[in-house]
Length: 118
Image 1: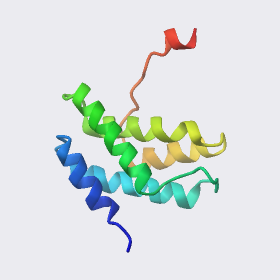
Image 2: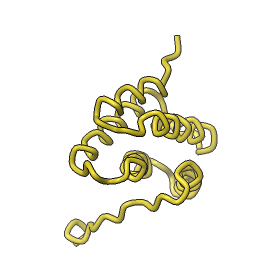
Image 3: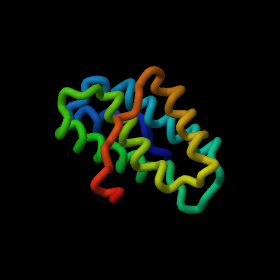
C-alpha cells in the first residue's frame, strides 16, 4: 500500500491553518518526486513520507510565527532549509531549478545570519 502523500500533506497543512493547502501539497509532492528522479542518488536522501512530515511540521511552525506571510513563500523556505543542507554541491542548482519552476516568481526569504556567521 502506498500512502497518498498529497492528501496527507493537504490535510495536515489545513490543520496548521494554511488556506492554499491543496495547491501547496501538490507542489511539495512534485518537489520531492522531481528531486528523487533528478538529483544524485545518495543513501541519506529521503524524499518519502518522513520528509513530507518534516516539511509540513516545520511549515506549520513558520505559519504560526508568520501568519500574514505568503504561504508559498513559507513552504519554499522550508523546502530549501530542510533539503539543501544534505545535498551535494552539484545537486543544489538542480534543486533550486526544480523549486523555481514550481514556485515561479516567489523569491526565497532572505535570512540574516550575521551573528551566526561571526
